[in-house]
Length: 375
Image (cartoon, rainbow, N blue to C red; front, side):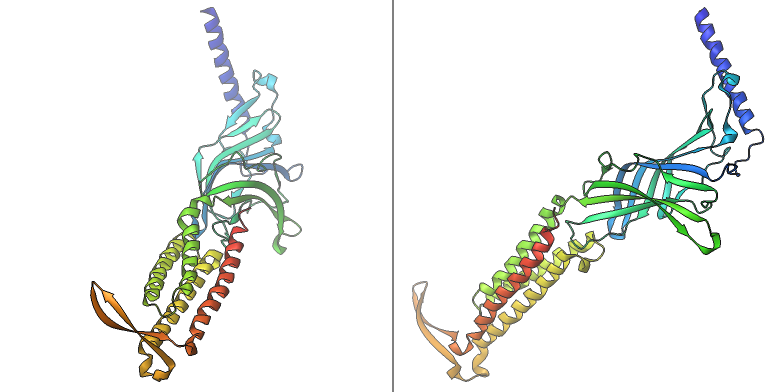
């Protein structure tokens, strides 16, 4: 029991010492004045990101969770530990001391997840941690979707203080490793780099504003879209090419081309719900080109079918060979007249063959451009 009273008394003494220390530190302290007596305040910052995702990919809006760290020295917050019962550090309300104004410059919205306090050490060293949720715009290049690689930037800087007041630098060993960052299933974080830059303007010369930019390297997990977009698009495109191998004047060819046209429209609609602009992607251009090929194949089929079945009203009967065959259907004998294109109109078949070869080369080049981005 005597030991318990001793511990209790020591705790009270420690609490009283911290209370007295805080009162002494803040006596006459002005939180709006930067500690620039010895020149610009050396401020180190870091961004320890824990989660990343696109909350609205068509609008290029991303979200990141993480801790933003700031560290600096304030000579006004120094004390002798022996004078305050060995107190080495205290927590202060951030509104009672000077904190360097740093914000995410390109953010659409910033939400503080946890209320933060300032950690002050006896040497005057000050540390401030914030748990933030940052929504920001990321300029995306979707040319090779879904094998695209993205690079998103989060810019931190101060719009209140120039290099006359603070010298902002990136803290070492922070923001250089993306392996610990959780991300949505659609993307994998490959790199997380940091770079410091200065922006000069005439109205603040010779000083400048300092920015610290964190660059997030992303690689899309293509397996998510392979089964529901890439494979159907490629197979549909090759089926359209196969229409040129069907009989030139076959009416089933027209029906087949119409069905393929509907399939392409569905694929383009699905692609448009995923990316900002379908035309910007190689896959979208491939599907648009497939629409043109399908349209061309349909027109050729209609022309050939009309020449075969209605040509007698436009051309002379000399242009056609008329083949009469005896056929037996369900045991009954009958006569059926079948019109076939004469050699004079064999050029229609040649157009089909040439179209198949030419369009196949274009499809292979487009497909190679997409698949080449997988690595």
